[in-house]
Every structure is written in C-alpha cells, then in structure tokens.
Image 1 (cartoon, one colour):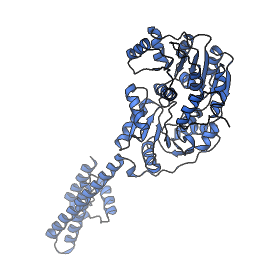
Image 2 (tube, rainbow, N blue to C red):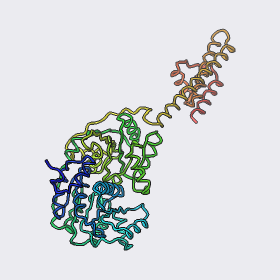
Image 3 (cartoon, rainbow, N blue to C red):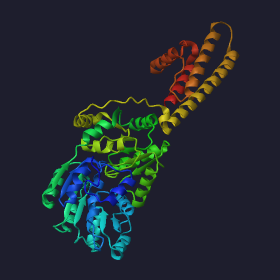
Image 4 (cartoon, rainbow, N blue to C red):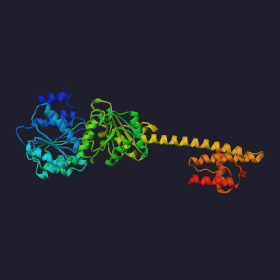
Length: 489
C-alpha cells in the first residue's frame, strides 16, 4: 500500500498530514511526487479536488533551503481565493512540522505597501500570488525571482482561459532558465501545450482520469423550465431538497448579483462571490460559507475555481455550463471525500443543444426532476397569494352589499302584474352589474337596445343567468353601458 513516506516525503510532513487525517496519497500524488522530488518538470492533469495542491507543496517544502534569505519557490494561481487557500494549506504544513519557512501571499485587494514592507524586512522563501499583483511587484522592483528554483502554475487551464497567457509568460521569463516547473490543470488546452513546449524541459505528462469517477459518484438531475420560470423553479427546488451547503453557478457577475438580490428577498441565507467584490468582502463571504453561516453561495465559475469547501451537499447550475469540462468542474464541488452529492441543472428551451452536448460528453442521459412550483417557494409568490385573497374578500363583500341594496330597491318598486316583475328583474341585473364594477371588471347591464353594446349586454345577461329585459328602458340600458365603459377604462 502506498503512503507518503514510501513516496519520499519526510516523516515530519507525513506526520503533519496525519494530523489532518490524511494518510493515503491520491493517484495524482502517487504519480507526481516522486518525479518532482527527482527534479523533473511535470504537467499534471486531474480534476479539482483530487489532491493536486499537496502533490506540489510536499516536494516544494523538501527543496527549501532555510538558510538562504531569498525567494526559492513561486506558485501562480488564477484567483485570490485559490491563492488564499493554497497559502493556508502551506502554512498548516509548515506550522505542524515546526519549520521556519516564511510564506507570503501577494494578490490584489490587499495593501501593496504592507506586502512591500514584508518583502524588505523579512526573508521570504515561498511566494504565492495572482498574475496581476505579481507583475505589479516586478514593475515596482520590490520582488526578485532570480533565485527561484521551483515554479508552479496552479489551475493553469483556468488562468489561461481568463486571459492571463501574456502575464504568465512574463512571470516565467522573470525566473531562471534552470528552474524546475510544475504545471497542474484540470484540462489540457492548446495554450497549456504551448507553455509546456516553450518553457518546460522534457516534462512528464501525468493524466489522472477522474471524470468517470466524478460522474458516477454524484447524482445529477435536470429541471426543465423557462427563463421566466427559472427563479421560481430554483426556489421550489431548494425548498424540496433542503441543502446543508449549496453552490449556485451563474454565467456572469451581473447574473450572480441579480440572483443574489432575488433569493435574499425570498428569505434565503445567501451571499455572492465574483470578481467585482473587494478582497475583504470576498474573504468574509468565504469564511461565512465555510462556517455554514450562509446556506447558499452564488458564484461565477472563475470565482469558485479551485475552492474546496467541506460539507457542500448540492450544486445548482442556474445557468447551464458552456462545455463538458466546466460542467464536471462545477458538479465536482459536491460529493467530496466519498460523501453523497446532488447536482441539479436548470434548462430552458434555448439550452437544449448545450444539454445534449453535456450528456454526450459524460456518456449518460440525465434524469429529469419534476418541480411543481407552489406559492410558498418564494416570498413574492406569497405576497401575490395574499393579495389575491384580499381582492376576493373585498369582491364578496361588495357583492353582498349590492344584493342588499338591490333587495331594498326591489321591494320599494315592486308593484302588481308583469310590469313589477320586469322592474325586479332589472333590479337584479343592476345588482350584478354593480358587483362586477366593484371588482374593476368590464360589465354591461341586462338591457338590450341593439348594436354592439346591446349584444354585449345580452351576453352578460346569459352568463349571469338572468333574462334579457327589453322593457328595462333606455335609462337602464344607458346606465349599464356607462358602467361597462368605466369597467373597461
């Protein structure tokens, strides 16, 4: 059986991992750690959440010379969140092993002057950062990579996908030609191959096929809806499945913010994560999510890249992913460490082709979930229900009042013979007409004087169950038609 010591990791680091309940290496660690310890370049391809971070951190720590007061290792990440996460894992290893290795994270949203002060006053052995802030320090002349011997490009596919190709090349050129390079990615794109060919020395390609495992272990469903009905369908689904922690993916920052406002208004414990937030806000959101103080995190793909949060039970694709790899990356946020996970994708008619592409890519047809939207699924629906009931109550009161007035009026006018009967009939007609007007609906009286108004009156009379009284006179007909016009306006 493989363990970390047999891979060449020092016992102090193996013990530090045991304190985190990590005793058995993952496939990507088994394949890459010995190669990196041997000083070779590696391109490691595996899905997020398969242990890629430890695959490069452990060999990196083994190569640090604590006596040298210079930056010896550099880790480049696409997002601030991933930089923070990698820094936390590295500091945990360093602390548990009682090593005096100094680590510095540099990324946007932090005070650059504090970073400069740290670089000047204290020896830093390992730097972890995002491309923009790293190059900012390079331009300022506040950081020196001339003695870097180990360079890591983490989540390289995402870094290049969001437009950091030129920045990555500039950073690589700041490091010595003799350095060792490790590139880790979930996919193998044309740009990654280009980087490997230009800047890596006989790199070993390690590919761990975890896609099938992720697809098999996570239960996946599709909710067929419309763009207009998607919010209600999501709200009802959340009520139905009751996630402990869930991530909702949207395609753009604007969509994230809009959905955040909508779900918050419906009483859900939600927050948003995207690139327009300040760093302090982003860190605060992630802390609340990890501490389960919010139930749902609404995020873009970029913001959630590389995030590994324990306890995520559900993933909701509010916007369908653009490709199969993105779909697998998203659903891989749940079902971690052998636990159950559920991924639900909301699909409108225009998404049919994208869904077919995903189903073809994962080689399975996704089951459909039936969602019956009830008023309780959203606060706005509840308000609509209350409003509807209120209108109904007012309408019934108005009808009752009209009937009472009609009854009084009928008794006063009632005479003998057919004429009195016709007047009573006319009174009933006026009562029903008044009740319709009180509800704000278009209504015509029972009288018929010919023409379009007369036909409308006759039709209204038949619907209400009354007769068509021609002896009601022009005054009755005029009154009814006038009421109809007011109702229509």
